[in-house]
Length: 119
Image 1: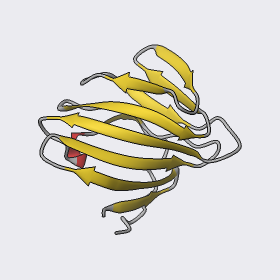
Image 2: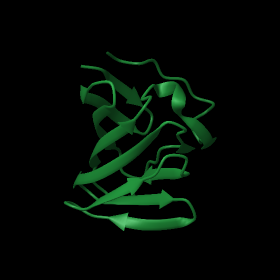
Image 3: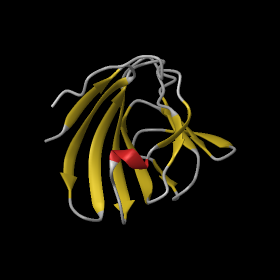
Image 4: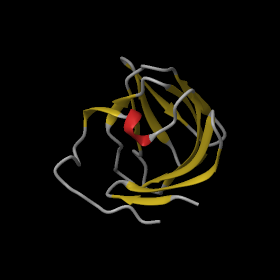
């Protein structure tokens, strides 16, 4: 199983095939992922622990435990943890191409840091 550590938290690929990938993503309190978009995949995020602040296009919404949100192909999006406990989501990616090189980073506060993949 592919796993990775980042300055914002961790991720693990739980399952994948040619047109979907399922990840468990944990975001540390007060941290956030880059503002990004994808050309070839959509994403469905389900919160299983903590509270997520989700930016989707021009809108921001709070997503609580047992709630979800959908990010369309090409839509700018960001995941943040505004809480005091780790945020855990299940991310379901679907599309014709699911490679990590389909991430277009628009704003990334960690871009000057490098951390090796663990896995």
